[in-house]
Image 1 (spheres, rainbow, N blue to C red):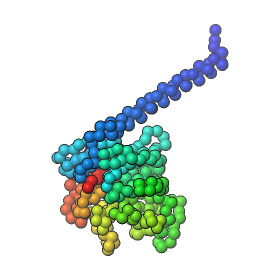
Image 2 (cartoon, rainbow, N blue to C red):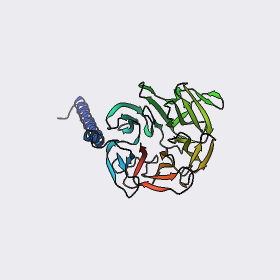
Image 3 (tube, rainbow, N blue to C red):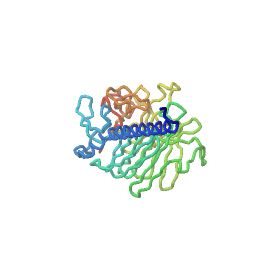
Image 4 (tube, helix red, strand yellow):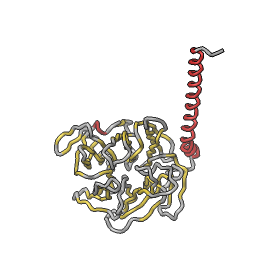
Length: 339
């Protein structure tokens, strides 16, 4: 006896529901498995930012680690799972990709014991993370679309969080921008790569519009952002607040467009650093004389270190333009000197 059409339709619906349920269960289990290293790291409590030192994201595990600052030295792994990491003062910032589509990023604010203080979920792929020297101000950038600054088909979203008030600037585009001496409005404005001054008010960042990039200075109390000069991306303010390390576009070759420079804020004079390779990273100052950054080429990565998906190593170079680059930590990214 042949099944009726209604019975066939019912059987197909039941099969589809069972298939979707199985897929959802598998997705949930995968998500839980992916988050397990971070949960274990927080539960363990043995890894903390309890001493000055060199911290970074370990490529092989995806966990925050502490190193001796030399490639031959030891590394201690056991911090939270992060795609981008930074720490200063009494706070740390961990950016973590969330599973699923569309892409989302979890911004976790942590204390020195790496316990969670605050959690925010924003759209996009983790890209840049910074904390002010006091730990009061935090900023993160995500790729809303695209995943590389080497192309024009990308869009970023940059937020600033003030922990003293709890106020979150969801997008820096909310702050009025002055460009070439006049208020500026354009639908293609993108911000990224914030770095904070010691006064917890001024900051520097990159703004892109009409195919050009600008170094901008922000003032939170006066609610203004002002462009200072062209062709300066991913600024990083030195500990003494006198210089900015940044990447400058020196070529139209998408494979190697940038070179690391340092800008003196008093004279507005710049000089190249001795690193000959193209650096697509927001450099980090280890001290007032040394700049660290990630370069593709590391082994044992999970593929989330570089903006191009390749693994990376951390290198260091003198900030005055002399000397030569030296390998600081293989298979690592997100360098930060915790003081």
